Image (cartoon, rainbow, N blue to C red; front, top):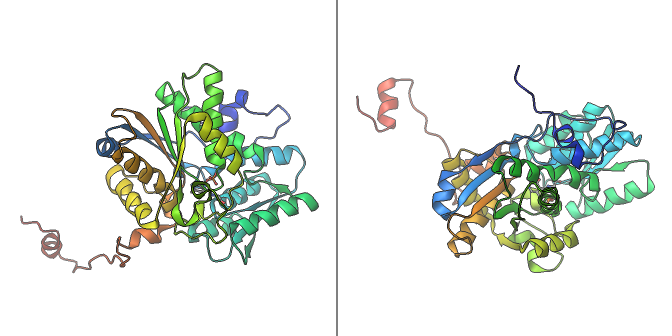
Length: 357
Ligand code: F0G
């Protein structure tokens, strides 16, 4: 019988703070494909792989951290988990809490999360509140609830989340045999940037790899506090997952950047959507806009000559395109894409396709 992947806690238990007393709440997250991209390798001159985190159970990388956060919450007797979210964390928290038989309360910015993510939180049974404010307001409230009420916070300010998420770096090294030269990743709260750096560091300390990759993180230009060096009070971008003006892991991210000789950059919404199309059309991977910023980062940095030819590059694409499909149905000028309608006639179809028998 084929061996089934056991989820990140069982696969990497020796690197995580779990014991026999920890009830493992898992949906089989992790073990996601690391896909070689001939197209991006050709465009950049590097040796490029895409870590497709949309293949996790709820369609984003959040599941890696949520299996840890909810397992530890249950171990500590929690009955309610709470989170603030731009959509993916809430989808994941709702699913894992549902599996564990506890409640989830999720706070999202009103009107600012993608339809797919909203529907996930609802169908998995979360108590969902749309807050009149942005993500940063939601996180402030979630932290205050955690401090004063009987709830357990599962945002990435909870270290269990970062611990679970670091397993993505382990998987990359397990597949490639060593760490890559460069790692490209979207940045919102900067929890994942921090988690990958931790994973790469721990595997190197364990003798599983010889180096740390240079960690290159990217924000949307309307929502780029780390790049600009100041809080953005009214962040705006179509990449709603990373519409965050005051990142929770800001300080840790700067430390990780310094440790890895890393870099933070930013792209506007049109550059993000153009990168999303290139990845979908030429590598067959459909990601939500926030995730495509890794691709924009690779193409821009290689065009500037910052990526030596043949460098091994891994791009984390964090969430599935089906969560927020509306952007695929517009062209880059903002016009709706309407598929052509044709009569149910083979000759007519062939003609529309420009073919002759
Ligand atoms: N990509 C996607 C698809 C995300 O959902 C997020 C964060 C990020 C990237 C950025 O990761 O915050 O660790 O730097 N989403 C959070 C949420 C904020 O609520 O789902 P980060």
